[in-house]
Structures are given as C-alpha cells and as structure tokens.
Image 1 (cartoon, rainbow, N blue to C red):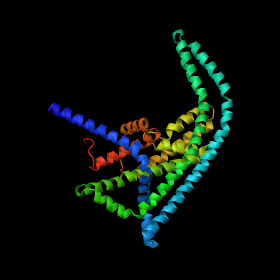
Image 2 (cartoon, helix red, strand yellow):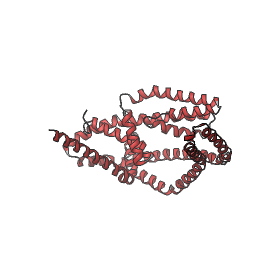
Image 3 (cartoon, rainbow, N blue to C red):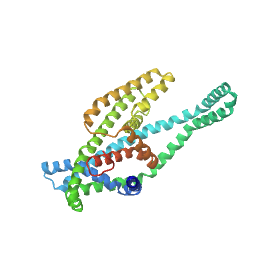
Image 4 (cartoon, helix red, strand yellow):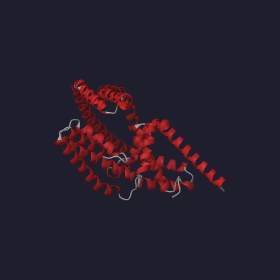
Length: 357
C-alpha cells in the first residue's frame, strides 16, 4: 500500500510537471503566433449582440452587420489608442525636457551623499567601517547613476517603439480582418467546432463554457470596469493636485491596482510619505486623501460588481505572479493569475480534476 501511495504521488507530480511544461511551451511559442486570432475570437464574441441587433433592426445580412460592427469597433479602438498615445507622448516629452535639469543636480546630491556616508562610517564600530564604507559607496554610486540609466532606457524604449510600428500595424490589420471573418462566419464556426468534440464530452464542454462565461467572464468585466473607474479617479485627483505626468502616472497606478495582492496604496502611500519627508505637506495630504477615496469607492463597488464570483486566495495569487514574472516577465506577472483562475474554474466545473476538494 505505501508503494501505491508513492506511485500515485509520483504520477501526480509527473502530471503537474507535464502540464506546466505544456503551458509554458504554449505561452512561449504558440500563443504569440495565434494571438491576433485569439483576440479576434474574443472580439467576435463581444460583437455578437450588436451584430444580431443590426440584423434584426436594420435587416442587414450577417456579413454586412459584421462588417459594420467591426468597422465601428476598430474606429473606437484606434481613436482611443490615438488619444492615449498623444497624451503619453506629450507627457514623455515633458519628462525628457526636465531630465537635464534633474541631471544637473546630481553633483550636489553626490557631495551630500558622500558626506552622509562619511558621517555614518565614522560613527560605526571600527571592525565594520571598511565593510560599511564599501557597501554604502556602492549603493550611492548606483543610486546616483539611476537617472542617467533611466534616460538611456527611455530613449531605447522610444526607439524600440518606433521600430516596432510596422509589426504593430500588421498585427492590428490581421486582428481586424480576423475579427470580421470570425464574426461573419461565427455560427458555422461554432457548428464546426462542436462536430470535432466527441458527444460524451459535448455536454461537459457546454457546462464548462457556461460556467466560465458567467464566472470568469463576469470577473474579467468587473475587474476591467473597476480598473477604468480607478484610472478616472486617479487622473482627476492627480490633475487637481497639479502633479506632472498625471495621466501617465494614473495609468501606471491603475495597472498596479489591477494586479492581485497589490493596490493603489502600494504606490500612493510611499509617495505621500516621501512628499511629507520632503516638506510638501499639501501634496502628501492630497495623495493620502486620494488613496482613501479610491479605496472607499473600490470597497463599495467591488462586492456589487463581483458578487459571488470568487477570485484567487492571496497565497496562490502571489505564487502565480512570482512564477509568471520569473518565466515571462511583466506580461507573465499579469497573465499567470488569470491562467490559474481559469484552471480553478475548470476544476470547479468538473472538467478537470487538479486536486481533491
């Protein structure tokens, strides 16, 4: 009997390892090639109610209704992208103009840090002075070099974004065309996909699909709405506080707030403390007030929007973020909790058995 338990444990570990390898290979190689078509499938599902409305009200054939809805959605997305890129470009240009002023203050900052390090080393025990001096000098040199490194990184990012424009244009063009073709032929595609599924599995697929649509889809919509509301509050608050690069900062903080475990307080509270230490009492109090408003609004809206839809417990979410970041960088940090949530919903629906309840 103990041998059977050990064998079952080894098999479970083997299944987990193979599943993890499969997910990694899929995310690493397959998804980048199929991403425009996966986005097109999701957008076609999103456009299905407007397409049916155009068919019923305007009496258009499906291909015409799909073309009209795809064009309207494309115009909306491109308009929002243009406005966002214009504003971000403006704020990045402001930042680049101010960087020389910031860099000009580095010599004075370096002298002050060297004096502070000297006083700290002299006050330390003799046995620790050499080690402490080397450690602090290394930290100071790295800290002083951060602005220039950021300047180089920003220039490299702008150059890389400009060189990526042709690939981005091809990606968007492919996604738009695929959205139209998928929407125009969606009923036939669904029938074709159903025929590929064995009949004993069809009912389980339908049950899992309904559960995913009602839980995971609703959760994603609620999180997107909460993120949009958070961005609006942050943008208005930072503009009222006359903070430079307000929209860029609001978007970055809203993205941090969308991550599991993290929240707006991860950025706003340390920022307020630094402003308070710098003597800027008005901005510090304004940032704290903004954090309280955002927290209060989210606390009121989140239960209503999410309802009974369960997310991830904190520890699995943190583990997924860490593993995703180690494997795929920032994108993996964002997507790994969503993949884990998808697996959890498939398990709860009975489609997969990943653990014992």
